[in-house]
Image 1 (cartoon, rainbow, N blue to C red):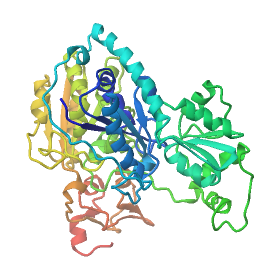
Image 2: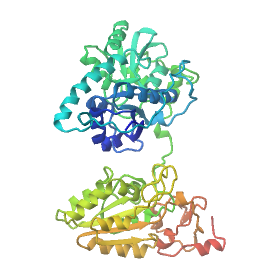
Image 3: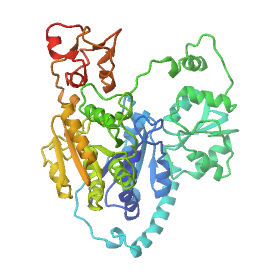
Image 4: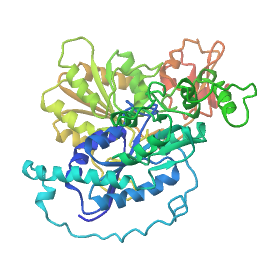
Length: 544
């Protein structure tokens, strides 16, 4: 309709958006459309490690990849201009490490001292009707395919002249092909090498690649995840080293790049007794400290999290629990150990539906957060009801998108800009899609009532839904009176430690509660069989 737009997703988010993404490449637009995509090498917060550069090749779309904060700014502006220049969506691929770094950005130039051209004034225009361009029935789509192929050729030619793709001259004995954060690491390890720095990772500039390969004696491709550049160069007939030395798994670091380069014979194996200063010695010093030397810090649900009593009960009832993507996925961690499957948003309900079609004594339960339920749980629950499935679905409603930074969602009544809006009624939504057996629990910390209800619904036929509602303790920042342990009454049975709450700590012969971490949810008071934990004891000045 003539208005510039941008969409942001993580790598798996582009999977969800792919229907719209693919057809927009055929239709083009009247104004710039940019997808900001974040891949996650190392899977810091993801269920897979896919390399979304393949999307660019698969979809026949231009993709840029910045290597620092300045390029994030410049490439996003360039993506808009490129989109409007070639009538195509453009993807800007980032990675976790780029997104978690920061540096000074010159917003007046291109990062190289050159002023950026002024952006054209954005105009909101009326939609221009053009069914052959925008209605993708087969007959019209067949006319658009040649446009897509011709456009890709023109973008490739343009990429060969764009300064974001460039040869950085140096010692021609080794030539390094790289992009993104891997380029920064490679630059640190090979400060004097000749580089082919690729700011556009698709389409690739064939002429520039051949020019680079002709001037260096040996070519090495340093890229995280898949051999995307490496395969392309080898298909062009260019001999290069890559994934046989530089891992296909996880994140790179200057240390790992250096070690791989030594194995590949690209660098001498220089050792240093000092392990200080700059150059190889510094990397050897870094190698001396491995992850094994650091104390473990396993992830866990926050102290006082209202999801904890639900998982505690599900474990006691020996339920098979199919989970979902969210902070409640941490229910899989010991000592709760109360989740059996977790794949993608909405899958927990769908997997439970499928599992409960099979004979078996185990009770299968789905757990899903409120944000994820609004996002993609509704179709799965609708399908479960419509196809007369069986099973219990527990919606863990903490009234916010907790795991990724407390963003609002359709149940919070606010937009991301904090403007008041309609609240989508979760109970009404469940009933509208056919759920008859629906129970709302406003106090999941009442462990006895919760256990009785969950057991009853697990044994029921048909689809049952429990909404366990309590706001995220980090969002409301509420701190109740904190309980303490009477060491004389504590039998050191360890039952309270099984709820996996961080403030509970083992002392010699009894359990203590860290008063700084505890927010006073009271769950430990309820589960203690000897009644050694109480708020009353704390009020009397019990142990810290």
